Amino acid sequence: MSRKQLRGSGDLLVTQTRSPIGRPKEIRKVLTSLGLHGIGQARIFDRDQPSIRGQLHRANPCIRTEELALPSTVAASNVIDSASAAEMDTYSYHTDELPALRLSRGMRNYAQLETYPDFVALAWTTGIRCSTYLDRICDLIDEDVPTEADTAVLAIADCAGHTVTDGGSAVRDAAEHPLEVKFLRVDYSNFSIIWRTPSYGPGAEWEPGEAGLIIEKFDPQLCASYLRRTATPDIAVRARGISGTFAVIY
Image (tube, rainbow, N blue to C red; front, top):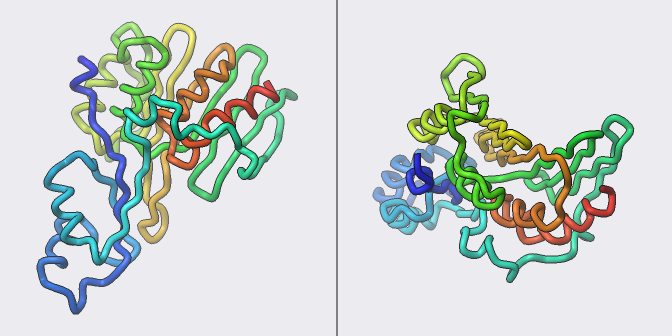
């Protein structure tokens, strides 16, 4: 499966903030079409879909839109990348008596580094779809999308539990059910990539997903690139600062 087939993004969070009562009937129909049936309900859409842009424009009086990830053209640059993480909340702890650190900004944005004797584990919040994460992260780690030679764990909505399979099969299944993928882990020969879906909490409140890597050594420059290209915006714009802070404890 080519990377071109994997491309796609779910990077726009749309929340209904007002009732359509007293407004033109068209707005109520558009909200229903978007799957929004009450104040506080939220859905994730692809901002590049022309039909979605038109619907969002018509429903604008009753909705709020939020970017969940930086566009890849912006995320690949250093223009908006802050070297400071001083304004973030810091939580230090230990894993196997080795240092670990979690940096957060509000409830929806965090990045953390855990160190172990033989590897390090990175995790951060993301709002992008699994296909977009695979596409962007494979570019950075200089690997093709997973193949039959790689091991994978995949979970899809309405299916029983997690399925252990090969990387190629997992990617094909994920591509066939892009909105139903809940969890994907792919184990290459010397590292692993992990993605967990964004979800909806109580009252249909949107909660970010989680992306991660398990690697042998920590590389600050690559860490900043991972965050810049795949993390939620509040983390992505502070990628260099977060990576620099992680480098101190590593």
